[in-house]
Amino acid sequence: MTEAAVIEALMARLGEMWTVTLAGTVVGLLFGFFAHRSRFCMRSAVIEFGRGTREGKLTVWLFTFSTAVLLTQGFIQLGWLDVSTSRQLSQRGSLSGALIGGAMFGVGMVLARGCSSRLLVLAAQGNLRALLSGLVFAVTAQSALSGLLSPLRTTIAGWWTVEGGAARDLLALTGVSHGGALLFGAVWLVAALVWARRQQVRFWGGFGAVGVGVMVASAWLLTWKISSQAFDLVVPVQSLSFTGPAADMLMLVLSPPGQPLKFDLGLVPGVAAGAFLSALLWRELKLEGFQGGQAMRRYIVGAILMGFGGMLAGGCAVGAGVSGAAVFTLTSWVTLSAIWGAAMLTDRLIDQPKEAVQQAAAEPTSPHADPELSASYARP
Image (tube, rainbow, N blue to C red; front, side, top):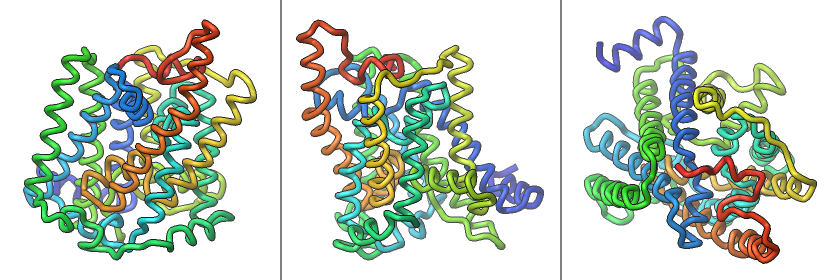
């Protein structure tokens, strides 16, 4: 039975709405499992790059990024996928929102010790700090979408806009073909393979990171296939992101029925379930809390910055940094660059001086996390 026949059979049996929600759940389940096993974390990758250390975190991120680019562009090149109708390409975008929102997200990512997807993964294994930060992130994202912070988001987003279509397509703007994009992804995959060998990245670090990238590309492919076969339901062509889905899940819980069933509402619980399953199988479930009020304030401020910044930018570290970048959306690449730069600067100005003081006082410290999260960032 072909893929199209399977989707058609599921639609006939479950209905279009439940089929797309099930697709989100399955992709999320596998994403959560692979992300937990690989310790996939953009924050750790950025800090490793900024500090010039070589511990495998950047290599893990590159495995995910290059795999997502290669598979997504490969699907497009083969004619299996058309992303031209996706929100990231077809609708008007905001360069001011991408730049400022990405910078806010990058600062918040460092303060909260992880991006939105990483917080969800850590919360599933029992990290209460990540759980609280994730809730604050979701509340802020919803407020920025349609609440108290919405006017501010709309104002900033309107400062510098770009039309949809070719104006947001980085490949069209640069004249690079999809074949060139495939070559770009292949170069970084080879680099990741070489560095993984030199840094002795463990099996699950590389394999799990590739799995995360496969899920990003699979989400693009599945939503496109379902969209092309649906008759009664408009199914957006999309991939993985966590800002909008977190806000949707919040409204579903607080004000049922909330949003109608869709891919995003299957994604979030799927990721949590996948990460929980991984932690259960490898006996990594552990309740962890805060170690003082100062740390708690830091996490909350970081979560607020990520929630507003992610909604302003139209994507998070995964939504813009991997999913959007894989289809070469201009605004996604601006967001990715802003996240990267702001995160490195925040680490240099806040975390590195703090750790230098700790080292001078002969206190144990970690190059990637304070003692509260040291166990969460074990070598991949």
